[in-house]
Image 1 (cartoon, rainbow, N blue to C red):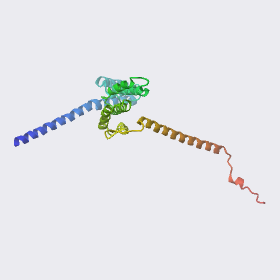
Image 2: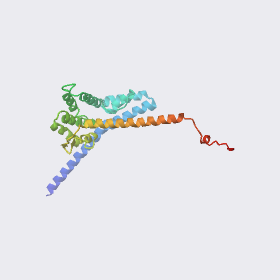
Image 3: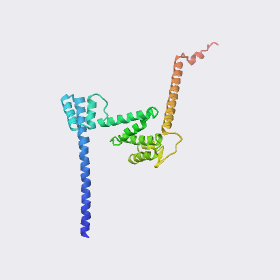
Image 4: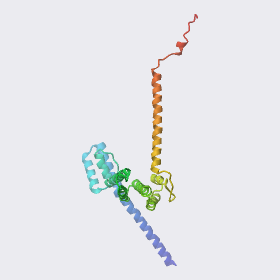
Length: 244
């Protein structure tokens, strides 16, 4: 009996040690990929913006390039020194985002313009499933589900992507969008495609905005006319002769 308890205690201790080592490994990776390069980047910004120390700036830039060549803070330093908008994205992440936008351009053209465009778009999107950009991955999963369901009529494949989206990012905007036609793991029968509904809502919002602008313009015109009218005092109408 005591031997069994000892074995259980040893097993618990080993599991606890493994868990602690895993946490330490995670902290070490975070330190090397986040904290150190970020400190280099912040020092570079300070030396460039406030201290005007070009030598230190070059030194910090070299450290980032040689020690963290694929890090987002290295790319941020390059953007900052080039006077560009700082995105805090790696070169690979920028490439993946551009690939997604490229694929969406083909999807917008439709299969009438390019007979095999949908298969091309699907291939590009599938190559982006391993992206580390959480929002982009959600967009990819949503778009693949959308294309397979509405464009290809393939509910089995569409379900795979949509279920993965619901499981990995249930509260994301794209999961909310997907629930318009895929809710509770079931496809919803729609009278109109979500894209058409969105276009109608956007058009309605545009028309409402134009109506408001017209009212503002009309109000301004009324004020301009009012400003052009001569100022007439009420006493001008009550200027009676006392003798009368």
